[in-house]
Image (cartoon, rainbow, N blue to C red; front, side, top):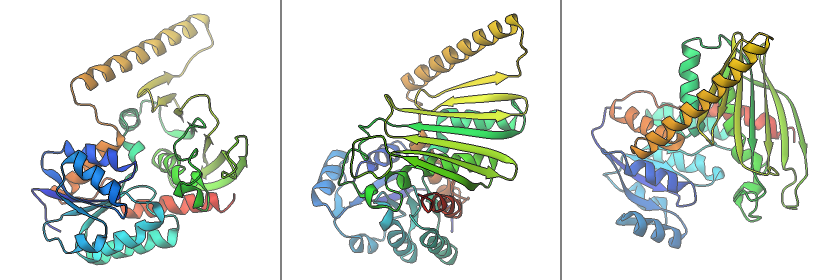
Length: 345
């Protein structure tokens, strides 16, 4: 591989998630989406018209012959990722693949092997790793703000109106773990980031909602990384969307809210009344400070969500010829854990 000055992107897949990719690429000055492809001609036409993209295709065989393409950005359903990524890499294109990398570890391994053979750049979108409070938490951990992380809890709560869960015809319901197979990847890669190489300890599921096409809509799973523990609760019955992360260290706690993009540092605390009062004031100030900074960042046009930041860092890996922010090897490791979870459902 050699470093690049400009990136020409072929977007493959024009569904819901492609909107985040289109917006992100449009804000990178040295990158441009020059072609779109989807087997749904209406979706292709809509995206091409909205984003003023001249070249539109309904078959990847048509973009394989284009000589000016740097990258395939693959935003298709999970069960198509392996074939598309391998075809692109064998044809000499770099690839960026939406999460999860694949639905099976065998498919993921084939992508990893192909990347090694072709020496192309291949990355995966693990976007929550790049959400502002997560980036800030990683910085705090590097600086030892709460000491060694010994446990993590990640709660991902959706309402019944979740667009994938509520759509009985959505492709996610055909996956081995149903809707969980599509989204459980998020807490898994976060746990790997914060406590290390995890293994599944237990998985419990239940059914509380009314959608007959969902076998389960509540999940609680526990994981272990040597002596460190982690857990995640995923729901599709919540009264509001909520994504919260608690990281327990030896000298403090970090509490992250992905939706409000806030982070609280809770240091060690004595039992005295004065100490508790001061701690309450400290937490309130941190929330106010985080919220104010977020508003100012948004107003300045410098706000990047996790999707955009992940895509920007992948673009940088191309122009600087360095490792992608999330490699397909890491994607493979995460899929192995995911596979172990839905193997217990």
